[in-house]
Image (cartoon, rainbow, N blue to C red):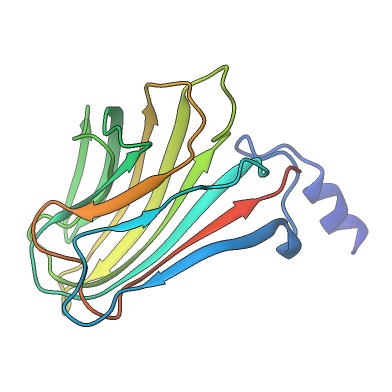
Length: 182
């Protein structure tokens, strides 16, 4: 690695420590939604061997105006806030609905999200969630930053993602990765 990149990599950034190499991410599981859709995507028996978790999702051809929510260990109690843009209308809010990871509101179409679950096994603090997401609704899309915390110190051993209305459409993909310590 170059000396410049090496020195940048040693800087503590956003609580992640060093900038992570491509080998820091390990695939834990991936779900591709089949014919007829699915009410939720669930990951259970999550190993406690990583420092952080990351969800990456692609929702294909969503025809329902809905929000997507996560629950952890069967518990949906979280607090959060968001900033997102929808055309010329920036929006922000506090105390979002439990586990909100992406708010589609009036948008339909395809969208992607990346959600970080920081220090998911640390029993000495609440868990932090942050999501970067964006969607296309044939020119009327949305991009957003969502964050929150799980008001519970228990290690995350399972998580489920579900739309508040309808199903995950066929061909949607949600993958869970473990992130090794920096």
